[in-house]
Image 1 (tube, rainbow, N blue to C red):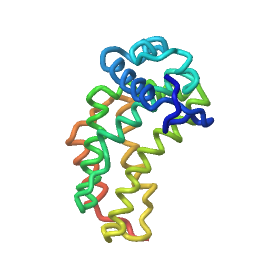
Image 2: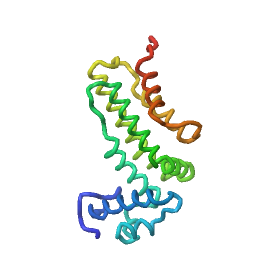
Image 3: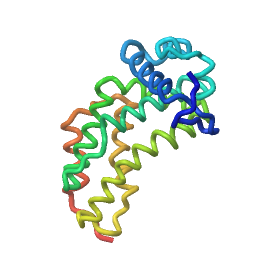
Length: 199
């Protein structure tokens, strides 16, 4: 299965694109039918039709595979809305993001966050490869709006990204309330319709 293809590991070892896609699909399929804590390298390898040594050549362990599968899923399912209007794009982007969590990814993401608290290697990878990638997507939306003149040139886009994602993480981890659409509507309205403080 380890033919030379486009995909490579972090250290540059070639890996089969077909096997890679099979592992990503197998991981998401297993997560749909079972809970994250029960996921093992053996189960993923069997479901994907690859050898367990292949997985260990590409990933240090289960959390790294799950993180990569979720990142690919988010890039495909959430995408980057482009209606030509900043508020509409941010609203749609956050609704897709939150809906993805509501539809079964919340427990998985929380489990990865918990893993990051005790595994420094995974914590760095989770931050750099997952958190930052989703944050970068949102900032691209904000930059487009800024270029159209919908935000002042001196707007702190990093702060807006924090104000969007902060409430999501707070509700996701504390589970004191939901991430339903009305919450997104109120959040985006607060961020983009409220008067901005003057410098």
